Length: 131
Image (cartoon, rainbow, N blue to C red; front, side):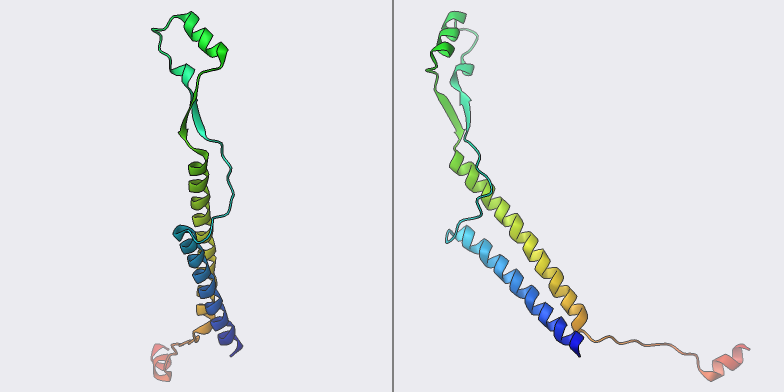
């Protein structure tokens, strides 16, 4: 009987873990909470002086590089890159936690169900006929 009680307790624990992970993902995607800040990447930018073609005279390219006035072109801002990376990492982590809850619940289901063993025995007549 204790196996059944512990099995049902594990089933409930697994369901609670799965629901909490799903609620966490929902709250992050709805904007009610922020994902874990795991990543802090700088913005992806490109030096504009490297985009000057070969048709410019070498003196003009060298002067532009030496002056340091070439603007940096920001391709992907840091906040977008970090928010996307952190949201995906949060989603993967909650998926892992939900799978742990599933494993706990399935273990509980194995403990809660009754174990029925059916043995096939030979009848006395079959044993006599074989000999």
